[in-house]
Image (cartoon, rainbow, N blue to C red; front, top):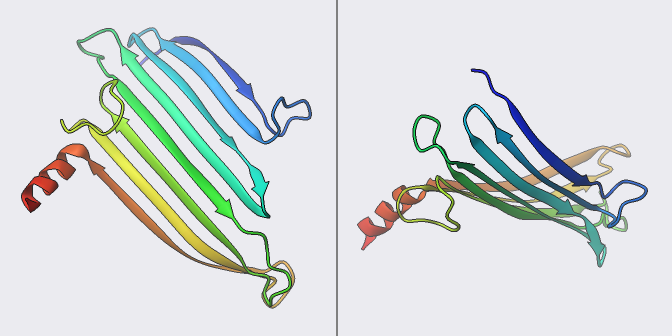
Length: 168
């Protein structure tokens, strides 16, 4: 399948020497696909800071795909994703210099342009959670062992709605 597109993208790198905001990465863009008559607008970013010795790194992503053609190529989709990473500093005064981490991310995608979880079966959601501990300088300097737990959940609103109705 052939495709042709045009668009624009603007980015800010938080690691650049001349960054307006240090540690903030931000991208904004829009692209139009001429064959499918589809437009995609997106914005995403992440930031990293240290608060009380802990590294805090929130992130977000938004994307909307729209199509004026309601026939063969019709597809509309709206996605919101957000999350955060937290990491403790290494406790160097304790054997194995342990550190801890926590990561959480959520995604909501609709098959149309609506926000939030829809009950008409057009919403897909995902949730990811991770927590763990790192033991650093195990046996030799620089060697580490990580122990963690992860949780993942994904569903379509239609499946979830049916499941809730069957419990009533």
